[in-house]
Image (cartoon, rainbow, N blue to C red; front, side):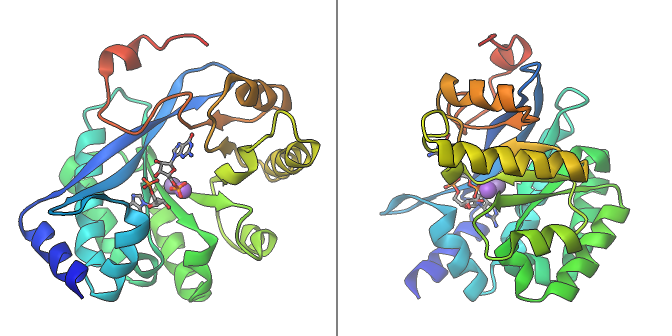
Amino acid sequence: REMAKDIWTALEQDAFYLVYQVQKSVATNEITGYEVLLRWDRPGHGLVSPADFVPVAEECGAIGAIGAWVLKMACLDAASWPEPHKVAVNISGLQLSQVDLIETVRAALLRSGLSPKRLELEVTETSIIADKNRALHILRQVKAMGVSIAIDDFGTGYSSLDTLRSFPFDKIKIDRSFMNEVEVNEQSKAIVRAILALGRSLHVPVLAEGVETTAQLEVLRAEGCTEAQGFLLGRPGAIDWNDALEPTLR
Ligand code: G
Ligand code: G
Ligand code: MN
Ligand code: NA
């Protein structure tokens, strides 16, 4: 396909770039880390979402190279951040089924000097279920290096609870669809509350995605959510260290 061709060209010409979105502690407002989001300004088309081009990159075999590039650059960037801040990298299903993900992660860490405990991989349930045993094997190896694993878009898969039971997750990220109306809709709030209770019982911190209003953040604070991410806390972009070092209290 035409997009596949453009993806290979973009790789050759170094046309992908990364933006970062802040993640903060709900209780203290401190920065805990940044999620890396891949961006591509496709010639003649403008910005294309990774939601649209990652599936094509998987199909045409480019995802391995793209994923390795993202991991390498993200670790290099993060190595210059203040000590405790983590970097969270999205991993697609096909990447997760490829055993060389282990080597790719190891190489990115070695090359950057980033401590493994500051790297987190975000995987979705959907990316796991294609080949569960293989995914489990790879994630265990990566964890053994000291890297942490977050389950992304939690609640939207069809077997979230089974996935939680069988995989060694270090963080649950509540899908942003549950943030819709959480401050006014009792049903949304009940679901969020249930996920937070689950996290507490499992001793796994919970991060709420897609927080756009102070009212939503207040609900999360009242319910004991660990971390939050969303347009209210910061839009994906270049990191403004002046802002980051003196976080505005909300
Ligand atoms: O950043 P945006 O909202 O456009 O992201 C859309 C989707 O693309 C999200 O599901 C996000 O997890 C995914 N995504 C963003 N960056 C990357 C990346 O570097 N690798 C992979 N595999 N997916 C990404
Ligand atoms: O699937 P994943 O959670 O990785 O998706 C990340 C995507 O969510 C990014 O593309 C980012 O642009 C988007 N995003 C981040 N914060 C918000 C938010 O507060 N509201 C909405 N609508 N999208 C967000
Ligand atoms: Mn993510
Ligand atoms: Na996500």
